[in-house]
Image 1 (cartoon, rainbow, N blue to C red):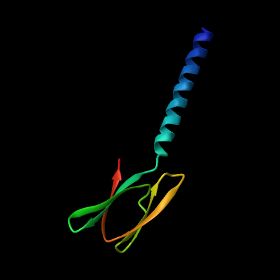
Image 2 (spheres, rainbow, N blue to C red; image 1 turned 30 degrees about the vertical axis):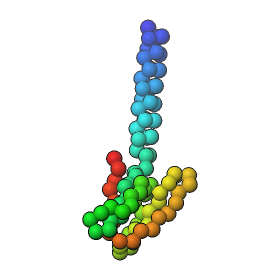
Image 3 (spheres, one colour; image 1 turned 120 degrees about the horizontal axis):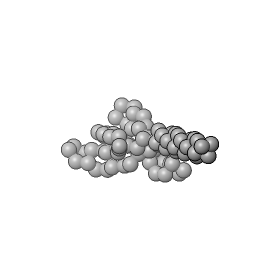
Image 4 (cartoon, one colour; image 1 turned 90 degrees about the vertical axis):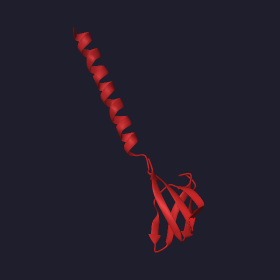
Length: 85
């Protein structure tokens, strides 16, 4: 009886640990964005951004590339920013 109780407790503890780790990992994923630059009604360039960046009037500054080696991009004009889900 004690062995079954011990095994059951270990299984429940492992399940709780796996759930906690997977839940923490999913919440720590950074958001990614698609940035499009327009000329009139045409899209002239598209980037996969690591962050939303910041806007100053019609200028947008954002980060692209890998998280270990990011590159800052500055665009000016009509643009759109969409969150990738």
